Length: 351
Ligand SMILES: NC(=O)c1ccc[n+]([C@@H]2O[C@H](COP(=O)([O-])OP(=O)(O)OC[C@H]3O[C@@H](n4cnc5c(N)ncnc54)[C@H](OP(=O)(O)O)[C@@H]3O)[C@@H](O)[C@H]2O)c1
Image 1 (tube, protein in one colour):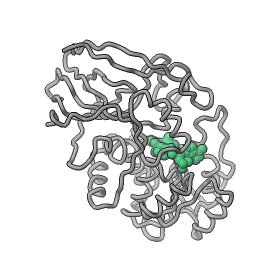
Image 2: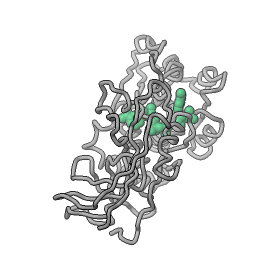
Image 3: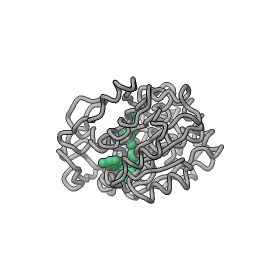
Image 4: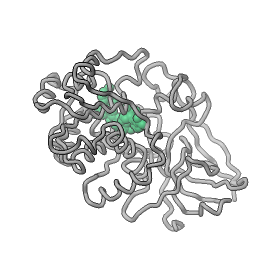
């Protein structure tokens, strides 16, 4: 095999506040011989998942995962295609989900992190990073395990989802609405996104959190208060929903993107509502439910087939567009899952 030139993007410095794509990252090239050790496989990255969590991985602080090191390839979940294999379990042409990072090629060894994709007809490989990937799973387990939607769901249950037009939020909102029949209100950052939530995803209402009348609007659409709040944003939106939380309401603390770039984040002002309303606010990390991913993917695949779950993606092209695209995620320039398409799948060799 001739040597392969591999473009990689590494973390060059740790941002203190907003990410500056030019100084935070550096592009470098390496030459891969294509020689593989025992059980190794060589993969070509097709899609890179861009996630708000990446901002946390750049901080040198205690977290659920170690920080990305300076000069290390930026970490990401990816869908890739096997192009050479020294492992009988992975055949050339097969698709895998793995943490390859921001690079065009990777040499991988079998690990918990390397998962074969059982692609079904009509579903793009990119779906395995979105609705059927980490963000879809986050929505599923947040609702089931933290929100206790099986117990609470139904037409009398009001669910509010922040970041509702994003990758995780759009799945959470659709499951609550179309699987559990709840009254669902989405919160997003533009009139277009609000239209999308109501007209295309069929939510009961959608509110623009940037509107001056946001809190008044929230009160108007939650006359029976909020039973489950699926929070992706934290900050002022969390505070507004704390003020509307129902007796024994649940706040699923999925993410807090509004605070990730803050050098010194501030806490919620209205958390005492948890006391007065005997409500519960609980964080979780999707990886805790890894053993149950199979069942969740089965359920969600079925909901896609039944038309209960739609997928939406914002795709940018080329490995070198990853740094700018990550910044766009923080500016709300995505609807649905934000992805970088690095290469086309070779369908001729797919088994
Ligand atoms: N707990 C877990 O295991 C887990 C797993 C995956 C993701 N998460 C978290 O879930 C959240 C959503 O992640 P995602 O991957 O699905 O991303 P995403 O929602 O697809 O993209 C981020 C969205 O956040 C919104 N946003 C950005 N800045 C904001 C601000 N200051 N205030 C309010 N909204 C803001 C933007 O939408 P607008 O245009 O609406 O502002 C943007 O499109 C993140 O907080 C992430 O960290 C948690």
